[in-house]
Length: 230
Image (cartoon, rainbow, N blue to C red; front, side):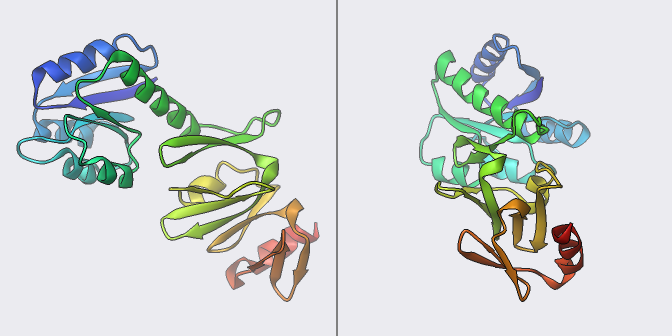
């Protein structure tokens, strides 16, 4: 169950969100707020999974409010204006709803949140080895066995996949490595995680996978060598 709140300075908008959430069995709308201060106090005291957030608030914009949240919560922006869509995308919003929105459009956004919620709480089933990775506004299913290596690009990861285009996602190396089988994937450099069965060659602390050369970092060398030789 996704724990959610809604923040909007217009009571009719909150009534619509409340009504729509009551029709969705995987969302529990715990509370609604018309004032940013009250919503922030609630968030600081309790953890929520999802926020339905109006952008055009009188005191603090929804964009600025979201930046103040002390932990990562999913957000679906709700607004009557389209000009904030790019900034919302840069904040990795689950979706961006333009008012007035229908229940079908609202449910589509809620399903995206539910899929992403499933990803961040997923565990790998040995019989069904795949990951759901959010890339932009899409969720992409990636088979574990097809991953060649993972490359860190500042705040993003580039997942290199056998005979497919790489997938770029806003994730940390730590978050993704926790989802991968430790007997198959290993971090060999601060910027690289490799699939051990995909290693084609190792020479002078350089791994070759699918023609790409990947350095082995000094701090990872001993652990990697021990596991690789096993």
